[in-house]
Length: 176
Image 1 (cartoon, rainbow, N blue to C red):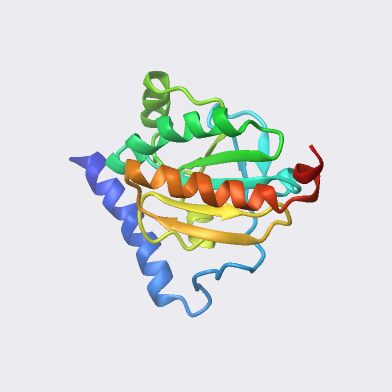
Image 2: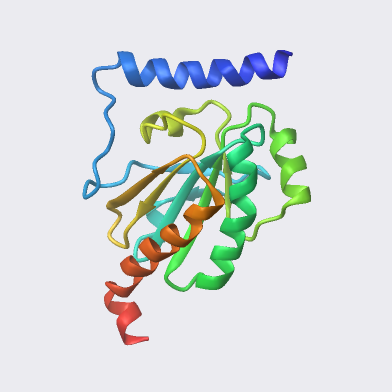
């Protein structure tokens, strides 16, 4: 019971911050993506969005208690493998309060892309996450290209097409 109360509290705080803060607004496509600098889930290195400039980046906010999130991560793993890491990178941002919840999920469904950890939800607030999961496609220049709210397995084809379209517009990708 305590766990579900904590989950609802995080969602409530995120939603209240979005609704009642005059400074928080949805970032429109074409604008610079918000800063992202978080430690990996294992407590290791800090990973930044800036370090992937020059690549198309798919930033996915998720939590182990979110049913659509649990369906999306394995499909994103397949997507990362299909598209490689030369011009594309997935960054998963976990919002679980208890790191063990995320670790247990990832033991059953391992991923090769970086999983960042933000138990306070500060990054989700900066990115204006209103629902779980929420994902953001960032172009190779660090600008927001698209926002995806929620997830259904049937979405993966559309997401892949959006990513490929951005990759096709990259000068380096065209010369490969």
